[in-house]
Every structure is written in structure tokens, then in C-alpha cells.
Image 1 (cartoon, rainbow, N blue to C red):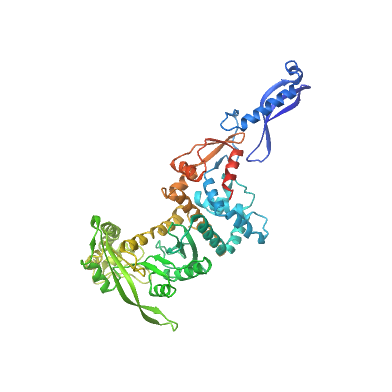
Image 2 (cartoon, rainbow, N blue to C red):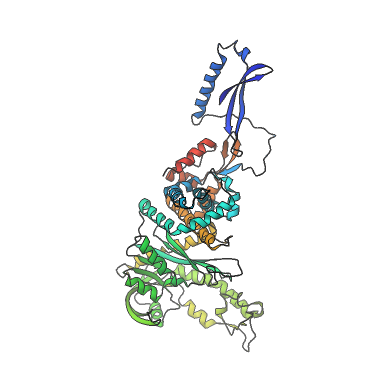
Length: 569
């Protein structure tokens, strides 16, 4: 505020004026706080009115600078909204900003983009894309159009966003190594035990290309897909990832990623924990040859006769609580591994096999099978309603079922389709049983099971990228920009998982993102914003991370100061 001396009706006039910068137009505006009167009249009460009221204004500014002091301002009831004016802004991203800067991402993007000599600020664009991927996932165009929702510098164009994508993918590997080193330094990351899994993302396109190819879709879609392999630590934080063409078999993705991790990430001996899709003779042999270990799930229904007999043999099981039972054995077995001549060589390995039965798994297996059985029974009654695609999951329970190789329609046969009761009974025998094979024979059965159960974190990570971060569908066509999109999703996943970790994993990423999304405020007047959301998550963020999102009224200057505090790393 300042004292203004103006002219009114040819006479000097004093008033106290508030100057502020409009957050939308960026222009300085003035508002009269108090009209004092004509200077000649004021001299009757004050020897030096100008000096007196300058002192009054100075005291007002001093009082206003103090926290928790009441503020007065007026509202024009006739004021109208301006088209495209952003009156509501998000403040919840301050929690993401703290982690973004704690990981040194601002320095990384600034340093690695210098050689491009771009006119745009790479760091500012990446902040927008990463924060939005957690809080408001959308296409790059939509994200750009909503950039005004943050209290950040967004002086760049949509074309700059696309150019930035092509730029950042060139240092994808360096970025992942940077994040890994930050995790070691700040969170004490251990890589002795790592989890690995593969998923894929579909693209609604007609033609395949070098990356997007037809393959076995996890979501049973006919569209071309891209495979993603992800390596994760025991805290549930990703270590590294890579993309593979959609027609790449799951089991062929592990070694390229593990080899790169050992080379560039200074990782020593590791125990790889993975699902049965990675459990192949070649992966086991290569791991053992490199001095590494493995803990893999082993299919029971698809196992050889000897293992099936061992699983169903009641002898040797140790009964635990609630019907859970477990047993194990050290078992030498032969596996056929690829050789240099393109053939197979049989080698012997010694491994521990742990099998257990869980009533919960038993119930889950039956519940998971029930929809397929319902469809199978209807398929038997009404085969003309089905084709190969519609009958997926149910066809294996039906005998005498033949599909037209061209159309996929059910073809009429001499023998009417019937439910395959024998197959159903054979499957049900193994409901509730689970098998794990491992090189770590010194570990107890319970340790092996506990370690394997940690695999759910990586499965959850894939669910988060698909559901919460919305990694697909992808609204991009250029390969380099598609790859950059997944890099952004990867960084967003790390920040989201770190946020959950900072909050002691009490809340899901979906709940945290919802809370931070709601932590938004509306422009009230004179650069004052009013906020209307608080919950246990914002309280926890204040307590655990020192980011206060619970103030109801904040002035723009205070908001910028708070955001600045999250960037001090």
C-alpha cells in the first residue's frame, strides 16, 4: 500500500491505495483502500498530512505483513468472469514439487537440455507433464490447455511441449540412473532383492510399426501393443524399465534389463523375484551362471507329473493357522537350455521347491473360475451366439467345440458341445495350491513365501500406471514421443510411490491423488485465494513432509513462498 496524492476538482487529494499484480493479465492494478480527503482540509488537523499518512501507511503495511492479521477488501457484485480466465488453481501439487526437487529433477533437466539450446524451459514443461500425470492425467494437448491451474511459469507453447518430448527421450537412460542414485543416497535403496514383471499397453491403431506390434495382450485386446519390463526394489519404488516390441515374449525381456542394471547401476548379486511367465530354463541358467539367484512361481496345473504328485501328496505338510499348510524339499532337476548351435543342452540344477495350500487361494480360484463356467454352460446351450473371441476363457471347459479358422464362428459338428467335466475336476484338485522354486535354499519356507508375496507391489505399480496415471490410451503417433510419454509415466510413478512411502503407505496412490486434486483454491480478490479442502491425507502431508495444505486463505505471495520452499534442494 502507498499514499497517493492526486488532483480532484483542482485541489490536491490524498488516498491510501493498494497496488497488486493481476494473476491473469500480469499487469499492475490499483485499488483505493481509503479516501482521506483534500490536502488543504487535512492541514487543519495535521501539521504535515503527507508525512503523517505516510507513517500510517507504513504501519498498515507492517501489520499486514504479520501472519494471521485480518484483511479487509471489497467485492464488486457486478463483476463478471472473463473467458479463458483461470480463477481456480491447484495447490496440492506442492507435495509433488517437494519430491520432484528432492530428487534433483530440476537440476537434471536444466543441465541435460542445455546442449539443445532450446528457446523453451525443459524443466518447466516436465514439471507440468509429471505433476499432471499424477493429478490430472490427460492428453498432452489437454494438459497444456490446463497449465494455468498451477502457480508455475508456463511461458511455452504446445509445440514446445511436443519438441520437449523428442528432447527428453534422448537422455532416458541417464535419467533413470540419476533417479537410482538419488534413491540410494536419500532412501538407502537396497538392490540385493529385486522384483521383476512385464505388462503391455495397447494402441488403437490399424497398422503395426517397429514398436507397436501384435502380441499377447494382458487385456485380451486385438490391438497392437508395447511391452514394458519393470524392475522394482523392496520398498516398491521402480529401479528401471524398458520398452520392447509388442511381439516380444515376456521371458525374453528380463536379461536385457538385468544386464543393463548390473552394468550401469552398480548392482551386485541379486535375487530376482518374478512370476511364472519369467520362469524359463534359460533365465534360470543365466542367473546361476552370473552368480545371481531367483525366486519364481511355478505353475502347478501345468507342471510335470512328478511335481503334481508331490503337491497332492498329503505327507510332509506342516499345518498352520486357518487351514494353511506348507512343505518344501531340495530337489535336483534337469532343465534344457539354449546352446550356441541353436539347440538345447540339458543341465542339472539344485533348487528348493516350496509348496503350500491356502484356503483363501482355494476360494479365490473357484470365484475366478465361476464367470468362465457360467459362460461355458451357456455356450453349451447356445453355441450359435458365440465366436472365438466371445468364448475366450470359457471354451477350454467345453468339448466338441470347433471354430471356423477364418470367421471364428462356432461350426456345427456331429457331436454337440458338452461341458468337459473331467477337465473341470482335474483343475479343481489344485485349487488353493501354489508352488515356488528358488535357488535360495538356505532361506526358510516362510522367508521364501514372504519375499514372493512382495511381488504384489509391482503388480500394483502396473495397475497404477494404467488406472491412476492413465498411461494408456496414448494420444501420440511418433515413436520418440510415445517413448517419452512412458518415461513421464515412469517418473510420475516414482514420485507417487515415494509420496505414499512418505505417508507410511497408509493410503493408496488413488486416494492421495484425489486429495491433492481437491486441494485447489479460487481467486477471491486482490491476489487472495480461498481454499476449501482438508482431510487426513493433507494433515499427514503437513506432519510428515512439512507442506501445509490446510490454510483456508492465502495470498499469492504466500503461495509462491510456500512453493519456493518445496524447491530448496
